Length: 175
Image (spheres, rainbow, N blue to C red):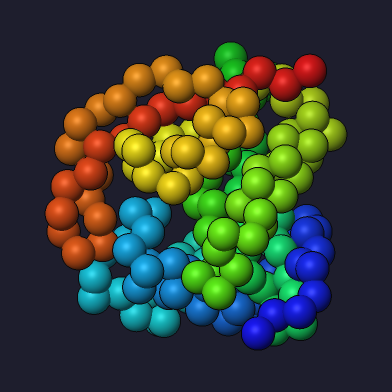
């Protein structure tokens, strides 16, 4: 059982140990049914490959990566995509928020969202957008955090087991 409060920090580069921990986190989330872009069967190697593709964008500052860590290692993460078209320098996309199943329902998701909003402000962004499974846990979290629902797209994506799910788009104006 985790006894410490996780700390959240920005990673600007990813070493092998962090890649492995992030891959294990993604594997856990997908095994738990999270619709974050991956399908079953999902392997640790596929999760590592995903994080190896993300690493250069993090190092280049095109993508901001926040991680939550406790005594067992990385237990949560969220990303801000900062490299957007020239006509959108004021915004970022919040994506791939993941919370390990052992840490759910303990406030870590909200902590990650708030930390991402703060980081976006530090990066000079005034608008964030994201999408989440319609009526899912994440959608309810974003609404509790003050994000504005734009609309739903039915059958937009699939759960890891192949069932269709709708997607809801949200935005948050930052001051």
